[in-house]
Length: 260
Image (tube, rainbow, N blue to C red; front, side, top):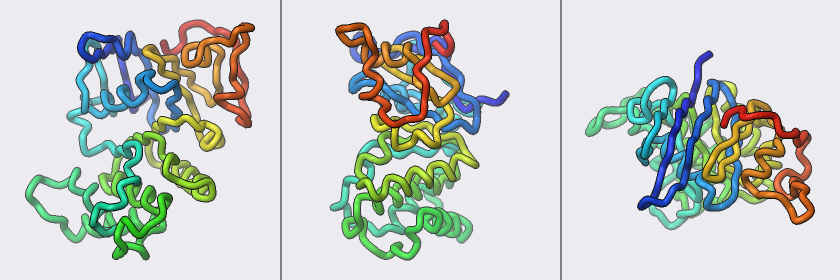
């Protein structure tokens, strides 16, 4: 089996304060994984480690069989609130083509092939007809689509999204999530989300992070995940409805150390 992500005995600290501990999991290529957990639990930090932005204190990380640094150019990333900066004076086309620079040598301009790829990605997200518009003249959902096109211009094999629907109104969320499902046909997708209901029809696996990580290779929330992320209520029951109301799922009983 080929893996998009392999993490072994990884730990990370800020100024000596543990943020992630004993992280071990393997994500097969082609998965659509939701990354859940409370604020401050380490979700975004984990993604930045996988991207090579941060270095682990200990342990190993492989992305597509290589170090995160060597996998650069095969990875697409949409950070949280990437589409919120509407005042930046740049056109849709210029914003999207910035992503292509991750695949070309520094100092070289875009070739005709590069420009064609940018066009294809803008067409894919239905923003090519808006290519001459300024980013600030778009809706939040439209800007998000442009940022996705920018990430796709790298032609990545794995895509990381941090709260992709955070700046999108409800009417645009379904279209965005259907687009992510379509992209998953050709690449691995990892989505940090607090609203798992929005992507519940599409995910294939779930990981929950709260300093430690529990991974489940199915689109199901387990009792271990809920306890790890949110603890238990006073009466000992798990408040799953707060995390996953409306999802077709089962909350499974404790089932060993899979993925820990």
